[in-house]
Length: 184
Image (cartoon, rainbow, N blue to C red):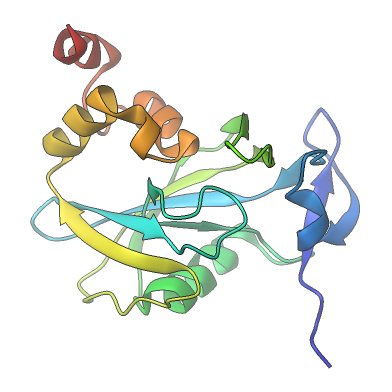
């Protein structure tokens, strides 16, 4: 018997109000729920970007941050970050830092599927070579942050909306003023 993957539901203030099957919170009427994102950097200062598997419900085939996911009920978010790094990319993380504790977004993809998440954003380091789980990730590249910033400004539609928003807020890929100069 397959275990149903549950996510943590939240009220408008970000308080836990229950759980729901993950499959029920990625549709056209998506409840606010808890997630996380992580941006992984290597010793050369490059950022790992990944291309979402084509079978993903939301934004299939789109380039995104290193990885993201949902904590299980009662699972500490940091434990979920480590679990998903191993599951999606086969990597161990160190120097994990909470960069955007209150990041929240709502986005609708071209098929009408809604993502609506309170999504703490982490940064981390690794020395490992990613081993991609094809159910989650179809491609990955280590990129220079400035090159990524240029691409995010020039072709934001090629990336997940949460990566574009997080990059702006993190300042990892240039300041908003720098991004505006690149766009003009």
